[in-house]
Length: 322
View (tube, rainbow, N blue to C red):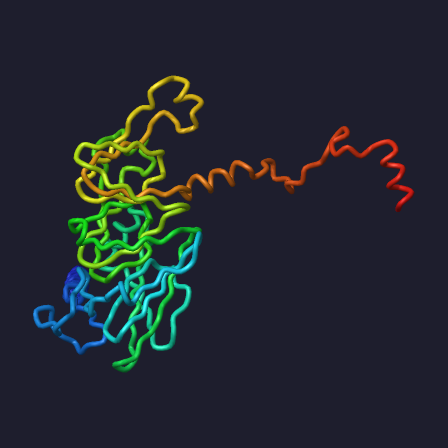
């Protein structure tokens, strides 16, 4: 009886301790306070004038990118942004090139593990970095961001295109802190399998500007109602609301077998705006991989049997010269 009572007492004690720990953990994770850069701690209902809060609770003043941003370079571009106190720019982790004194970086998941996993499915990193300037009023800080692949950088205002722009995976470089990254699913199985972009695209929503990456020459096309544009798989950078994304089979057996574009081609139907890239990163990586010698050798070509034109008298002359 004594042994049974002790087991019962220990069991109740463990249950009581476990319940209290669980309640403390739940209460700790349920309390989510907004992260306010450059301001004192305020509630979401009482924000300072001229500030905006992101979906994950980051508060900051909006940035006038017409004045504050500058895209530099030709084929491989960077973007530099001037920050005033209280302003926030959100960028992909690992994109920072330099930042001046007074600029601080805060890396988070941007709304929890689920938000980070959702961004990962759209081609971005799980973590994002917020850059703010903590200097005195009247001064500015600067942050410069670069791409992971030689790319052009395109600045777009999401509100000018109906509050939503759909891009290829991993297209976003940086944006205002009020921009959200959502998953955009293809409408049918064929577009997901053969469209060159997969089943999940990247939808940029919210208020403010975004900076997206494009390889090679950048082209913009404005499509009218019902107008179709057929593009090679992988050349899509993004499109605005109203554009229908689908794939079609290339007509003709010779075109499909020897045209170099595969069996399917991407079809975009207006109305709306489409942005295209002349050198998709996947195409360049595929060409480099195709030229890498196999078999684990050093990759040096050894001429056999007279390749190079030097023989006979030429060989004797070279020996005499040596």
